[in-house]
Image 1 (cartoon, rainbow, N blue to C red):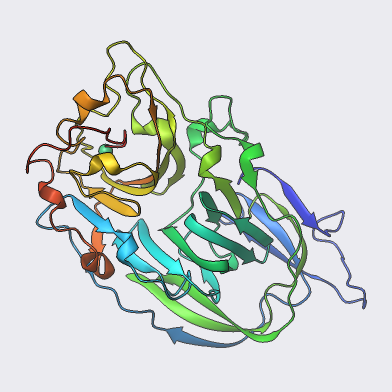
Image 2 (image 1 turned 90 degrees about the vertical axis):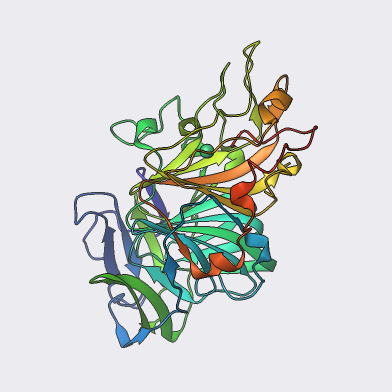
Length: 401
Ligand SMILES: [Fe+2]
């Protein structure tokens, strides 16, 4: 994030002597993006962050990727995924390309310590509560929270009081607010649908003792992605203070202020984050189109340059009975296919003033493959849902279409 935070103890001058109670120096670490030319933070460790005592390859569960061919719209039912596993190694990868990987997990146990050296991660918590613990401190996450974890931050996800349902977007690069909502110096502009006051960051250091601590590292490898298990001499949660503009942060979808209009507003008004070759959008409960002749549901549309993924995470989808969409559904509407509301929905929507819906959208500019776990939860009938007869006579399709 582009604005400054300071947590715990830091010395008054950077890169100067900063001593522990026993007289030894704290170990200063700079985490900086784009070499030394972008956002960074300085962290002060009790122990050397460089001290590893072992490294070995780790083989995550294999997951084949299948191209979306024959080209079809897809419907994945995430709630058919069983609870079990943790929010890192237990992810069921569903959709992927070289820019991002989208997965779903029902985490019922703490994850191991983890570092994603490929890119930032955006976690969306559908259900349950979790603590996201990192070298920067702890963040409490509730349903509807997004958490953005910068690349290479060591963290873990701890469910609190039961299993937690999460959608995870792993980027090959960085995730942040859309550039058009930021000033040249990084402040949110007045037309942004959220701003600094809506963001939550760690507030105090998280200190833990321990030796020979495992950290799972997902990292770049020529031609793809690999995993290595590092064993750190000391627990990485040994930071007594940090400051800077790079840190994990959280934002609730319920704090996203919808932008509405007299006629239908296109998805860019819902954009919440941008990543490399993809965007993440939030569809939230809102007043809908108020032109006297408006049609509140979207027109049929063909996003010629992108694949469109929608995760239905709350609200009333009863009206999409014609499509099979339900709570926890993911739809994939790929480039090369025109999609839109179910038959009859435009007429039924006329006069409706409010949509009670909650959905997260990921639009990717490169095509998405289907990962192996997706095939097991796919609704094979979805592709024909627009042509197999009219939908129910009552109810309203969500505006996401
Ligand atoms: Fe769409």
